[in-house]
Length: 414
Ligand SMILES: NC(=O)c1ccc[n+]([C@@H]2O[C@H](COP(=O)([O-])OP(=O)(O)OC[C@H]3O[C@@H](n4cnc5c(N)ncnc54)[C@H](O)[C@@H]3O)[C@@H](O)[C@H]2O)c1
Image (cartoon, rainbow, N blue to C red; front, side):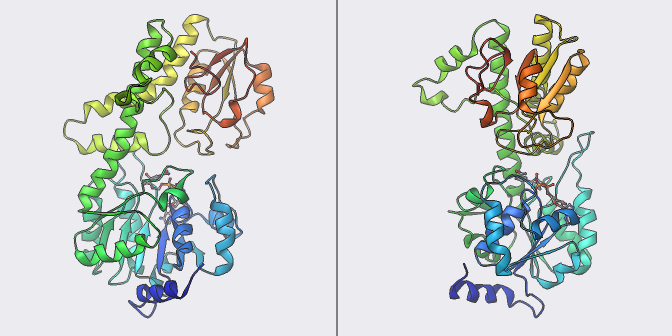
């Protein structure tokens, strides 16, 4: 709901030029990061332009459908569409109508461990003709360190005086709307004016604190945040393998480490560390570092090697050739419909290499090759939990050969 205060503030943001009838435009605004951000900002009273090259997603969002699973997003979209505070377009000319542009396009790494910095250059070339002088360009994608400076330089070379700020997204997918209002916001800037504008934008959304840094500090802080998380999962997975290989029950060892011992309470349990961010961002940090970051490389090997460890362990116990191998959960994490960079797919491939017939199921990821849960339960000789969805917690699996490194169906089992 927008009160009188919201309207006045909006006018203040919009008054930087006669064409600025949109308070901001989000490029990549139909994505996993862009759309929740657009909704949160529109809910705070801003008039938000959503720009995305994907026409299908634009049509979906326009008709009130959120293209992915995100808690609370669809009802909020339904509430906001009638207010007129959300406008959608695939035409970059939309940028002419604002003085605040937020970029949240994907930033992949190629198979040679090269961060695709070009992606920003290409998108910028497309967008630059539409960026107005005096625009605040906020980069929100996770980027290779130094990208903000490059973007500012390229805009200046094109004759555009724009402030560039790096304000990384740090939400966990699926919980964006709640976390956007509560997590601290890093604002990496080179001027007081840019800081004031970025702070005003985010403060209205509700972050408890705004932390000012330089762009490079914020770029590194974001990569280090994700890499730290990824490495914690890696050590948890390596501990699991060490203990499992020695024939002991990891549940007992993990409990002995953590129980009533606060200094070890943050040791995660084992599980697939996957998805579109953690591995990619560890790779970006590795590519940025002259020694290629051996600890990060080790974390990648351990986490990416976990499906292989599971398949090899099962196969050495009893050959998988000719057996039916059922995978429960193909998303990259529990309660998600996002299968990007999910390790369940690697698990499927490795089990197939060993000659197993693999059948997969997932309550949220739609894929015509998947089977209903009942059929997978009925036909599998061995069941492996790939994603810890809640639906698997109550399954009756006594007497079955089950692998559950998450411990969601009972104790951790391999
Ligand atoms: N997914 C997460 O949980 C998460 C969390 C924090 C940070 N990030 C970072 O945010 C960035 C975006 O990730 P995502 O998961 O939202 O990706 P996504 O693929 O879900 O969304 C990107 C969107 O950008 C659109 N797009 C691509 N090129 C475009 C262009 N030229 N013009 C307009 N739109 C364009 C795509 O159609 C898509 O809708 C990445 O850098 C990622 O590392 C993601």
